[in-house]
Image 1 (cartoon, helix red, strand yellow):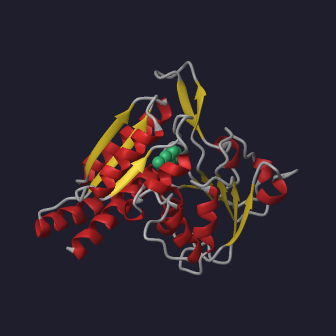
Image 2 (cartoon, helix red, strand yellow; image 1 turned 45 degrees about the horizontal axis):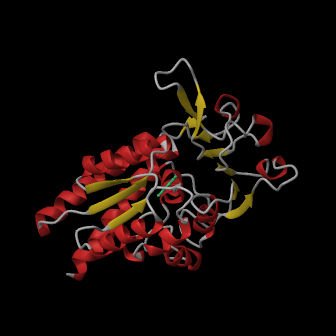
Length: 294
Ligand code: GUN
């Protein structure tokens, strides 16, 4: 079994981006800018946002975190987004999800300028992904493909089974992996909670992507020997032995499944750091387009 080290790969990507950003700064005197908006104080979101901000600092992206109170109205949030859309120093806008219930997620995502949609969630970007060539690839699915690339696991012609159909992971991962391209071109099955016996599908996987948000759901009997396992789950479970009182576990029962898998991602340290690396990459891509258009 080979452990897929997302932390290491993401660190390599960050070094590459740091060099690129520095070279661009020397040429233009400008740096990429990202704004991350968080509404309320969801503890998991706060950790994600802090990690994104820290990663920006490491590579030389100017990052601003806008913390808005839990009771922020949709109108107030849309107003902020419209200001950032118009700001030439901001190349990427990310609104951390989930949002408080008075705010409609879809209205917020649609308000972001598709040219600054570094999360890849805007319907315009998703539409481009369906056709095949999005300006911004959604970060988590792009991070999965990048991991496969760097471990030389070519999904072409292989059966990728995705468990979970979210707009953030399951659906866009399916779209990305079925493209007629290098390090895609897979036969993709998406299954979800409506399946009577989900193991009928998971057992067929050459590459299994677990992204349904149920702690340790995928067991050894549900996969075939030699499977490549990509665990996207980040579930907080209580653990009195840790300082924070919780720990993160994936959607895969790592102890069991790692005994039969050929490759597997750990949680934490697998897909999570890759999502952030891809966000940085998208922000640099957006920045490069603006300096090209100057
Ligand atoms: N919430 C969980 N994952 C994500 C993500 O990738 N982007 C945003 N904006 N919110 C999230």
